[in-house]
Length: 111
Length: 119
Image 1: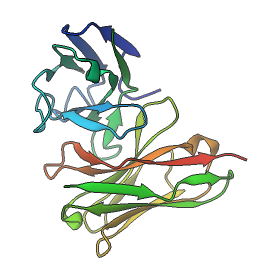
Image 2 (image 1 turned 180 degrees about the vertical axis):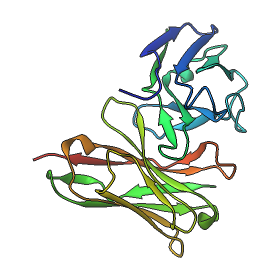
Image 3 (image 1 turned 45 degrees about the horizontal axis):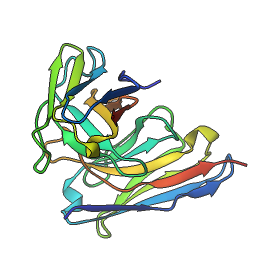
């Protein structure tokens, strides 16, 4: 049972948009603007896609965007491409005791 | 270019010990908090432990507290995780990860090393 709740899977056709949700609590997502999203291809290391809710590291396409409302953060991928097929995990800062919590991951399938 | 390379994983019996290493390069290692994050087969990422720049401040997840010890050698640019009293539920890929200078995200990850606890 992961601390943050994500859908197990989402899918979309090339060119479409998909949104992945990440629900936490008032102790993590709801109170800190330190939500990140990671892309992970099978057998590979996580890659940072979004940080601080909606910021993109250099090199990440602007097709990837993030937002937050209350205790729920969201990752939206527009103009889906085949290479976007991967697992996506959210992460939030949660304070000094257990500083970082993750979601269980969402498998994105590009149809 | 930032690089993090883990090593030391393998098969170990329940109750056994293992030490993981993470060799860092491409940045001033001593200036960054470093973390261990693990991922059990088919499961999500789970934060395990962290150490500040000089290793004097460390924190652990409840699930590993008292069994795992994080440390670092800044002269060798290496992060360690000493794992004792290993259990089947510790089976996972262990990643070392760097937290950004702003302290708000994991901005670099290693490729991971697999630890399997089984008899």
